[in-house]
Structure formats: structure tokens, C-alpha cells
Image 1: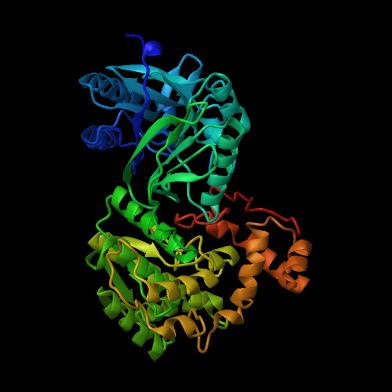
Image 2 (image 1 turned 180 degrees about the vertical axis):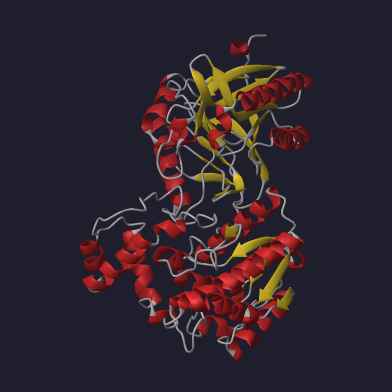
Length: 560
């Protein structure tokens, strides 16, 4: 019987909030098949996945390779044949090849064949997105037919503008289905709901939003898939930060027989610090797992940055996969030695001590002729940091775990970090976390054990680690504020200059801080660009992270 003649008065749809690995088409296909099997056991009619779920998001230049598109086509054709078994149909995201070019597509697989193809119309080309580089945009979408229903399928960015949803409504869509690869940042979940409610309100149609979850390089995806009614109410919500198969029931209701989803209980919303902490754990976990590192290795100094980094690593990977090294110098305080040991003890991780004094002596002897007649300065401080970096990299090479850098966004912003020293490593979990947030997250973790954590309950660091004045301990009685403004002022200015894109005068006015202080911070921010270009990747949590988000020239004489 032609689909146009089928009359259904109810339908069961499953949202498949998956954590794909970019490029692992075979592995992602296995997960999709397993999800379809679970959906079949629950009587699901249609399984809906996320944007580019077969290849993983964001694939970047992988999609420019014919061999990748060929592998995706073969996988989709095989999966399509399997839908002849009477089980659930599948709506899957994939790169696809059309006569017009390579496209970001959603394919409907049912009854043993590919029955519909929807192409992404709006290609984002801002922030971390550069889809216009690799994909060809499609026309405004039209509904795809499934068991007599007209599904209004959109792909991610298409939901953020009125035209695609309006076009689907005009062509008879019964409800809207949005497949997404929407990265996390603070405030993004609210933005998604705002745009989804706008589209539902404009079209008087219910909307299903399916998002990816997990970490991919610097991006992290929080899931949080949902269904909202035409009235804007959230009827169904999937959890954040976990894979989930959420089964939903739909039926036409009301005098105009509009399709609505049966409401379900919603998961507990996460608070700000809990949400950020989960993002950091998921980003680190998936970077380590998907790149097949056996674990991580970090310098544990007794300071708050390394203590928080260690706690995140233990919560994400488990204490048996985290190794810490204390590398004292003649300037290391007794308190730092005690606090590092206490952190390791609370976290249940191994702590090794390797004194860098012999390396300092060796470098001093080696460089003495070249440095003759010159007083010690920042050079000797940086040698200490680089001796520590060299030590960690040697241990990584010999033993296998990835070096975890412990620097924060405040330090990365103003260059208060040593290139090839404390900046070395494979991943910087706090790279997009300001120092003031480091303090807040540390206090939160000392009071809370995150759900799903592999680390201990109770405090993970002594209170003194959070309250003592931060210091690099590279010279006697050194404090960070000898070189930097107080962190509450510094972070306020940095957020205005970076995320706010404010000029120096505007930043001074809005922060109510002296203009010469803001000018000093702007100068440090610009001078440090060359360092940031060589820094390891790290989890993006703000609207404007260093790296693909913020691309400033290294040679830059603009005064602010």
C-alpha cells in the first residue's frame, strides 16, 4: 500500500542521543544497530539520531576525502537493507554525495531502502563552525513521508532561522524533527530552547530536538535532547552528558488533530558549577579514551590548578589511570609539599617526587659562560618550569600516559605560563576556565561528588589549597599578584575583552577599573597570542574559547 494511503493515529519515536567517535564509521554503525535493537524491543516505529551521527561531529576535512564518503554510503546502504526486517525505521545523519556536491544530510531508512534525503540548508560559518568550507548548502527542506506522516526534518542550524520551519509547515509537515551536533557552552541550553520555542510557536507544530553527547577534541556536547509542544512546554527531556535512548509516544490531539508527544517526567536540572564540571570530565574522558591513551600524568604542585585538574582526571578516568608527580625546587614551600601529598591521598592516586634541583644546577653550569655578567631574572624561572615539563614528557614517553597540562584561561590569556614548560602536554582541561572559576569549581567539588564520578566522595583537596595566595614558586616569596592584577579584577577585564569583544575604553567603563590596568591586560593578551598558538587543546566551555573560536593575528599592533 502506498505510504500516502496509510492512516496512523499514533506513533512511537525514539531519540538516540549518542556519543559517536569521529571517523569511526564501523564503530558508530555498531552503536546505531544496537540502539535500533533496543528500540525494536520497545515497539519503536522510528529511531532518530543526531547530526552526522554516522561519521561523528565535527568531521572537518574528513568529508573532503572520497574514501570517507564511500564508506559512509556503504554503511548506510547496508543499514537500509536491514530495515526490511519489519523493525524500526531510522533517521540518520551522514555526509552524502549529490550531483551538486558534498552535503550534510539526514537519510530516512525504511522498508529496506533509503526513502528520503534532507540536506542542511543553513551552513554555519562562525565560531568553531566552518561547514561552508566542506559542504554545499541544500534547498529549503520539504517533509519526508513516513507511514502517512509528513516529518518536518531540519538539521541543526536550520532551526535557528524561521524560513526552514515555515517552509516545512507550508508543505504540510505534521511536526518538526531537528537533528543536532550542538556543542556545549555556558548558556547554550537556554538558547536552544528559545529558538525551538520560536519555531514551534511560528508553525504551531511540536518539535523534537536530538543532540549529540560526548567530547570531540576541544568541543564537548551535552546532549540534553528534548521535545516541546506547539505551546512551548517541554514535554520530554533527555539527560545531559550521557548517552540515552528516549522512547516517546505521539498522537494527533485537539480539534485540528495536531500531533503532540505524551509528556514524561524530566531529569533534574544541573546547576552552573555541576554543569561545567561534567563538561570538563566528559571532555577529558573522551579525549583520552578516543585517542587510546592508557591514562594521564600531571605535575601536582600543591596549587589549586593542579589539584582541580587531578580531581577532574580521577573523576573522569578513575584513580588507577592518573599518575601525579611532585617536582620540588629550592623555592618549593613545605606547605606545597604537604598539600600535594594530601591531594594525592584524598584522591587515591600515586604521587612520585622528582627533585629538579640537579637539572637547575646542570643548566646553570652549562649556561654560565653565555650568561656571564648577567644577573638572574625570568630566564632562570623559566628554566625551572621547562625542567618540570621535560621531566613530565620523559615520563610520558617512557611509561605511556598523556601529560595533562594544568594551566587555566586567565594564565593563557596574559601569557603567565612558560612555553615548553608548564604549557607542555597533550590536553589542558582548564584551558577555558578562568582562575576565579577554578576556585569556585574546587569548592563545589569538595562539597559534592558528581553523578557518575569514578573518584571519591568527600573533599578532594585541603581547604588551604583553595585559600592560600597563588604562587608559581619560582623565586623566593613569589605571588601571582606580583605580576598580575588580582584575579577577580583580571578575570572581569578578560571576559569583557575576550567574550565581550569590548575595546579598552569600554572595558574600563563597564568594569569600573582604571583604564591603565585594562590597557596593561590588553597588551599582555596580545603578546601571548604566539604562546596560545602552541598550547595543547582543551575543553571549550565559554562562548569564545582560544583556538578555533578566537583567531587573532600574532603580529598585531592595534592599541585596544
